[in-house]
Length: 439
Image (tube, rainbow, N blue to C red; front, side):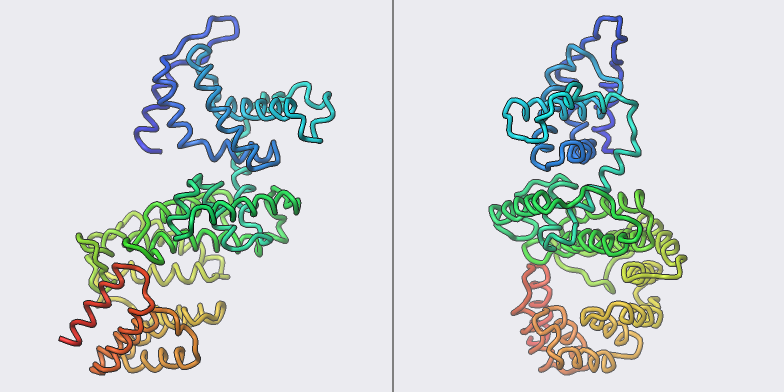
């Protein structure tokens, strides 16, 4: 929790809820507003997840969430702090939503008035924090349901689980805000119309469903760690959201691949401070100042790698994390165990064949056996037509040709990479390499 959030909650917590037979203890309205701002930052997505379960609709739950906070702002200064603010807000949101539904008389589910005689009774029972965490997990699996398109899964997860504004998500993925908004609207409609259940999958269905969730988290992290385009190399906010989601998944569902993905993200994120120069220029791994690497994230990530590998059934994320851990353990670029990295990429290719993984293995082979060995592998990939539109494949080929003294081929490859690159720091890096060859 951020320090200002913690301080605000402590300030409000000093005003205890009044006993039933006592007069309420008033609270300063400014203190209430400050604490509610803190509660919103800290708890709003927890509360929203529970309201989705209770009300069965994303939009109704979102409106109920805001109604609850407005009610707290109006009532808490005179009524005092409730014993459990989160439970109070959920109860208030649910009550106001049901009251609104009654008045509008739109929802068939409310035709039985007797069923609504005490709309908040369910939430006046002792609060179940474990149940709230289950609500968050249900929400993640709902947003990442395979019936939704991958783009819709990412957008809906960032909007509903992380609470990012539609404009923020659109900006991160270079999508017009109206287009992104429609994508989210359609995803919610599909969940409603297809009666997609708001639940954690059964044990039998979990492996396939978890794969969708992990893929969404990984896509969010990748966009944050290396933005696909734009003026900035990274998007810290997206990386942090992905890591937060990863921690939540490991906490609620400690599966080896969830541990592997969190490890992978932490180990990559540990290098953030060293990946750019003070002027925002790209710094490659072998030139990074390793004293800037975050040792706490490396230690946490490495421990998670060990946990995930103990299952003896490592998946793609666990193996990628193991590769990142080998890099992190090297005190200098020259101390990197490239033989181990090449071997790990070989294992990864066996369980997840991919030209991108082939390309990464080619780089490791080039470092282990020399640039000629790596170039042969890259040429084979490009010769098949794979990765022809991927700027990093041409950038790797250009670097290997440069190291072999094949200047003309290197120039052509750098030019091809430049024609495909969309990110400005990478563009400037490639242009600098090209100038060095043509000077």
